[in-house]
Length: 303
Ligand code: 13P
Ligand code: SF4
Image 1 (tube, rainbow, N blue to C red):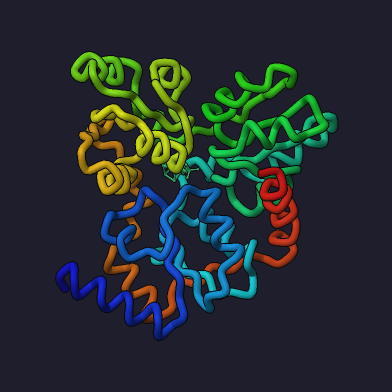
Image 2 (image 1 turned 180 degrees about the vertical axis):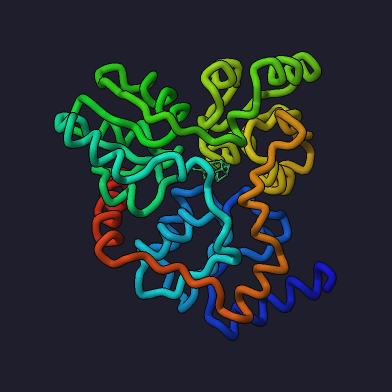
């Protein structure tokens, strides 16, 4: 099936099945092109919550589809491939967080949405990379445990000087792989470029950047900048939207294989099959979902 046939077939299936396609910036460009909405994890959660469509086909990793189901449980939520998980989300488990809470009752637990529903369910509030600072500033507690990303956690800690923020030991292997040496090399090769990075990158990388933000914040920054060359310190899929918005500009991945293999498990073929067969349906235990929903809704009330 060529590109045009694929786009037409997906359009037919969307109408027939009353489906909406939500896609993260990291998925294949063709999938982004057939999606009804492309965004970062915060924007996608908001869209998922408000949609009236019968089916939400979520083109992203599992925790994102799970969040959509938690926020809009009466919809049928599908993910094109059930094994597409987030490697960082697997680095925190609910029992460990509960143990921490028992030993440290004066800490508020702030959990990045890149986590399982079980972990969200034992947290006080969730955040994304777009709103983490605002979420922590909104809390009465001045002691915070940030779960699971140590890099985003340290980025946030720098911006809330009145709070004591301790961080879990998780990280994103895809962003962590960008080393200061490689980033320095890219900056030397392209001295006229602006360096934009996701806060999941290491502190040394963030300190070299001209801009640090969530994927949507990076997209907005690039859209409004005059510069015509950017080194992109996040997953390569983002370059698809950047290039569409700024056809005049050049985008250089901060390292060659800046690719999340989990996101790339969401292929156009699987997207098509998912709509045709209405697979793979995302279910969340209702009791866990109810508690996780509270933590996510609290976040959505903040910003
Ligand atoms: P965003 O919050 O920018 O969508 O990032 C999610 C993610 O998984 C980054 O690796
Ligand atoms: Fe998870 Fe990293 Fe992939 Fe984002 S890029 S989905 S944090 S593994």
